[in-house]
Length: 301
Image 1 (spheres, rainbow, N blue to C red):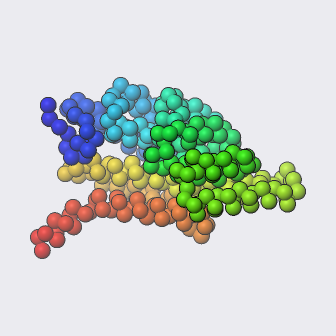
Image 2 (image 1 turned 90 degrees about the vertical axis):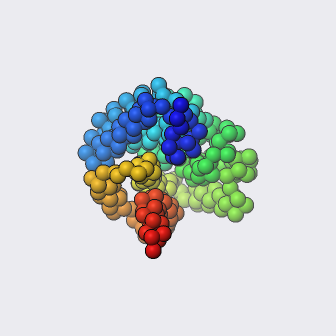
Image 3 (image 1 turned 30 degrees about the vertical axis):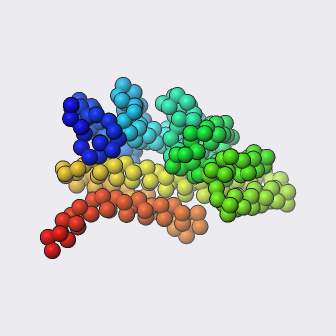
């Protein structure tokens, strides 16, 4: 039995023609869902496509890393579709249904869930799930653990005024894995500042104490939508191999980038970190697309 090409060999799985065909179909379905979501803005159809894709993936080899990436892509698009349909209340339960256990949810999806429920003003709905995820020992070694801990602190515990759990998170095992000494001190300053503001400001039902955090959450949510789309497109480029990919889809991706960037205010201090991450993703995508041609041209010269 033959092995997969180089991109597939890295996952350590054996590749049959039928399995490769199924992966290609799933990748095409993911592209269709993204187009329905971003271009056609048919959110219900986009969610239905994601749901069908997840159903098909459930019958495939879950140990293959490519299946995991496709599953995460369907889940992220499905989450956004549910939010656009104003069905955000069911997002977390739908995600848990796909992964069966809270602690098995990928870090990038947990980050999106925290930002989503913060944006709609219901951070408490993520408290139990995020706490379970962060205290799972195996998750402390995954990429993105620190970001989940940071978002949980800033967008859940601080807005809820849960000072005791915030301090426990900073000083406990989660904090030791997620933060450096400087980051821990910064986190403590944020908690103390929040407590001081709550004591100084008289209660006013017309002013939400977490309004500033909600503004930052909106910006972060837009950039994460862009990041998810870029990663999907970046993976598409990598899997293209020696073949050519559709100019039409490249054009669509460029239009989406333009539209989403217009919604991001670069003057906001909270945008700096996300713009830096965006720049890194763009550089990776550019390298994947044009580095082989540049190297070939250099060798000829």
